[in-house]
Amino acid sequence: MSGYWLRRIFWIVPTLFGVTLIVFVILRVVPGDPIAMLIPPGARPEDITNLRELYGLDKPIWEQFVAWLGTLAQGNFGNSISLRENVLSLVLGHLPATLELAFLAVAIALTLGVLIGVASVYWRGRWPESVADGFSGLALAIPDFLWGLIFILVLGVLFPIMPISGRVDPALEFNPATPFFFVESLLRGELRVLASLIYHLTLPALALALPLTAMIARVLKNSRNEAMNQDYIMLARVKGFTSRRIIWGEALRNALIPTIALTGVQFTFLLGGTVLIEYIYSFPGIGSMAIGAVLQRDLPLIQGLVLTFAVLFVAINFLIDASYHWLNPRMRQQ
Image (cartoon, rainbow, N blue to C red):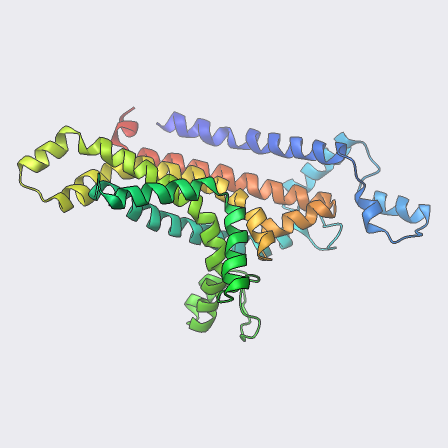
C-alpha cells in the first residue's frame, strides 16, 4: 500500500507539468493578441514593443515557458495583463467563493440524492419510485447552466423572490478580514450576513446540484438493490430486523461506498461547471473570473486559473482514492 501511495504522489508533479505545458502552448498558438486588446487606439509602435517586453511576449515560446516555471517555483503566478494585479492574489481572493458554492452544491446533492435513492428502495414498485425515477431523468436531461437560466427566469424575473446576482447583500455592513465570508460570518456570529450568503448561494448551488443529485440517487438505488439481495441482508431478516433497520443500517452502509466514490469524481466536474454558473449569476468566484480572462486574452491570469483548477482536481482525486481505500476493506487488503 505504501508503494501505491508513493506512486500516486510521484505522478502529481508530471501531471501538473503536462497541464501547464499544454495550456501554455495553446494560449500562444491560438489567434489573438493580448497586448492589442490592452492598448488604446492610436498607440505608438514603441509603446506596443515596450509592453511586449514588459510581459515577456517578445521572446520565443520555450523561453517564456521556462521563465514562467521559474516564477512558479518562487510562488509567483505573474501579473494580470487586464487587471494589473498579482495573479496569485486574485486567485486566492476569489477561490473561497467558488469553494463555498461547490461545497453547498455537493451538500444539497448528497442530501437530496440519498433521500430520493432511499425512497426508491423503500417504496419499490409503488408510485414514489416512479416519481423518483422521473425526477432523476429530468434532472439529468437538463444541464446545470440551463437549470441556472430556468431559475433566473422563474424565481428571479417572473416571481422575484430570490437574488440572481452577487455573493452577499451590499446593504449589509460586513467588513471581512478574509475572503472566506461563510466561515468568517459563522465564527463572528453575523447571522444576517450568513443568511444573506446562503440566500445568494441557493439558486446557483441548486442549479449545480440537480444533475449530481440524479446521479447519486440512481447509483444509490442500484447499489442498495444489489445489497438487498446479499446473504447478510437475508441473515438480518432471519434475525428479525425491521425493514427500516435493514434499509438504513445494513444495506445503506455498503451502498454508500460507490456513492461516495461517484460524488468525489463528479465533484471535480462540478468545479468545472461553476465557470458558467458563476458567469450567469455574476458570482465573484474564479469561474466568472476565468471567462473574463479568456475574453480579455489575459494570458497570465488564464494560466494561473488553469493551474489552480488542475491542483484542485488532482488533490480531490487523491482524497477520493484515499477515502475509497479507507471505506472498502477489500481495497485495504490488496
